[in-house]
Length: 64
Image 1 (cartoon, rainbow, N blue to C red):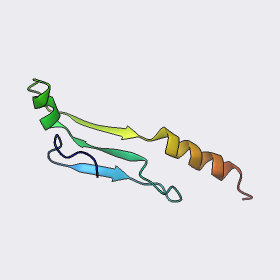
Image 2: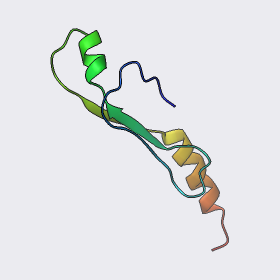
Image 3: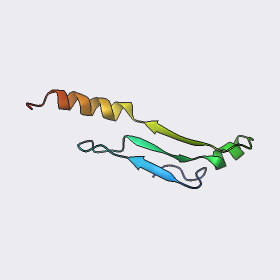
């Protein structure tokens, strides 16, 4: 699981069938904003382009 020291509220991960690891991760980062001295709220996510790229490469080699 990701570092929970700055998450609060929702935390999520996304998966694609056939990819053995998560391709999307993120959540609510209000704690991180406080650590950075900001008063705002934040929600964000990251997409693992490497995981999706290797999946797409394998899929293009498929017969069907």
